[in-house]
Amino acid sequence: MNILAVSRVVAAPADIEKDLEKPKFTRIDRSVGAMPTALKNSMKKVFRTRELSIADPGRPYLDTDFVTDSAKAGLPVRRLAIAFATPHFYYVYYRAGGYENAGKLLIFRIANGRYEFAWGGVEFEPDPSSPAEIIKRLRRKSFDDTKKFLW
Image (cartoon, rainbow, N blue to C red):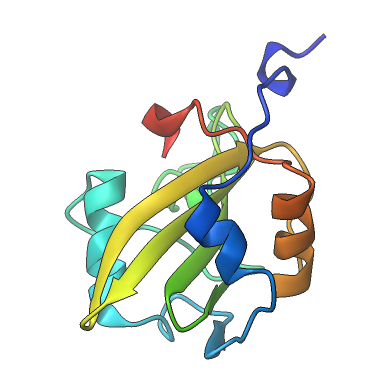
């Protein structure tokens, strides 16, 4: 049994669940470059890094912690799956490589052009391809929010 697969599932905070009752998407981003600069700066704070090291969807990333090829050594350890915004929140789903190989959802509250980390969760499912799939997973409480130290 994979110990990482054992997790506690929880509901997202009430304001996020309310935001997704009748979602109104203001943008869908399928590349890191398309994401707002202020959001990327907030993500660096959450990741505790100087540079935002995250690959675009479908691009190579360090998907394992075992590196035998020097060309892989410089790859990002994260890869974006999809990101989208509603009027009040910005949702970023990415794949964390290394020993975890987990899907992670970060949600940022949008206020006055700023992006403040509001909530996040981890799951061990294949990457979603659409905002609707992420919403469905949030509704079924697919995310574990007890592993904040893993961002």
